[in-house]
Image 1 (cartoon, rainbow over the protein chains, first blue to last red):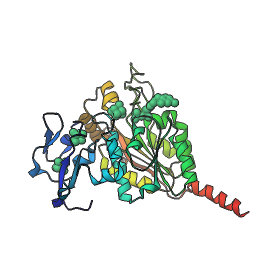
Image 2: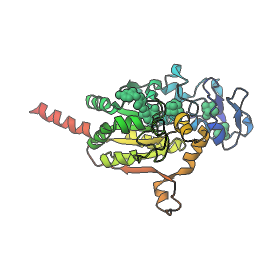
Image 3: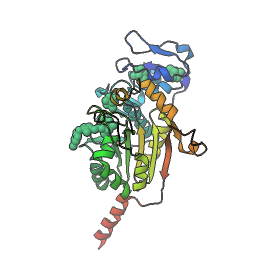
Image 4: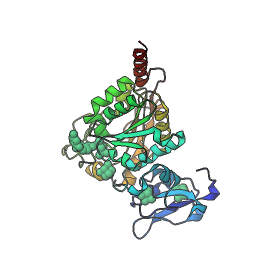
Length: 71
Length: 274
Ligand SMILES: Cc1ncc(C[n+]2csc(CCOP(=O)(O)OP(=O)(O)O)c2C)c(N)n1
Ligand code: SF4
Ligand code: SF4
Ligand code: SF4
Ligand SMILES: [Mg+2]
C-alpha cells in the first residue's frame, strides 16, 4: 500500500471487467480503451500517470495500481 | 498478482465477480467502504456489516468481515441488537433506498432518534433495482418506474436530511462519481460515536437508467458529476445557478449528544451495583 509510483503499474483483471467504460471515460490521460471483447485495455502505458482514477471508480475491482514486483 | 492488496485483504474474492450489472454504482460504493476501513486501520474481527434485501444488500456477502444478510428493511433492528450485545463492535449497515426509507423507514428514524452507534450507508439508486424498477421513496417527481408508467406523482425523501431531522448526529450525502469524498465521509461516519448516515448516490443503469432514458453508465456518472453541488458552494450560488442541481456534503456533525449503547450500559452498571 505504501509503494512509490515507480513501483506501481496499472493491472487489469479481464475476468472481472464487465466493459462498462467508466474507467475509460474518466481517465485524465485517455490511455485506456476497449479490446476486441469489449473489455478494458491499456493502450498507452507510457502516458499513464498512475493517478488511480480508474481504480477509484471501477465498480468491479478489475483495474488497479499494483506492485510491479508482485507479478 | 490478480487483485489489488485492498481486495485481497477485505473481500471474499472467491465470490467475485459480483452479480451486479455492468456499470452498477453499488460496486464503487462497496470499494469506498473498504478503503475507509483500511484508512481507519480497523481490526476486521471488530467490524460487523449488516444488510437487508436488495441489490445493494448483497454487498456484505462479498466483504470479509462478520456479516449478516437479514430481511427486507430490518437490517437496523438486527444491527441494534448486535450493538447492544457488543458495544465495542463497529456496526455498519448497508441498505438501499427502498430498504432504508420505504419498508425500513421506521427503523431508520428510530435508530437515528436513539443516536445508537451504528453507521448506515444507503446505496441510493432512486429505484427498487432487485425487483425490476418499481419507484422508491427517492424516485424524483415525474420520473418513471414499472409502477409509475405515467410518471411518479410522489415527492422524494431527502434521506440524509430525514436522518438528521430524526436525530442522527452525523449525516452526509455524496455520489459514486465523487468516490474520494465518499471514502472520506464514510471514514468520518464510522469513526463517529453516535448514529451516522452516509447517503451514497448510486447509479442503476439497468432499471432506473433505462426507464428514464438516462443513457449508459458513463452518462449517468457524468450526470452525478455535473448535477451535485456541495452545500458550502451552493451558499454562494444564485437560485438560477442552482436550478436542477442536487446538494451533497455534510449536513450534520454533532459530537456532543450521548450514544445509546453507552447510556444503556450505564443502567446495567447501576443496577448491578444496587
Ligand atoms: C418483506 C419483503 N417485501 C418485499 C420484498 C421484495 N423486494 C426485494 S428487494 C426490494 C427492493 C429493493 O430496493 P432497494 O432497497 O432500493 O435496493 P436496490 O435493489 O435498488 O439496491 C423489494 C421490494 C422482499 N424481499 N421482502
Ligand atoms: S492511473 Fe490514471 S492515467 Fe493511468 S489509466 Fe488509470 S486513470 Fe488513466
Ligand atoms: S470500470 Fe472496471 S469494469 Fe468498467 S470497463 Fe473499466 S475495468 Fe472494466
Ligand atoms: S438492477 Fe440496477 S441496482 Fe441492481 S445490479 Fe443491476 S444496475 Fe445495479
Ligand atoms: Mg434502490
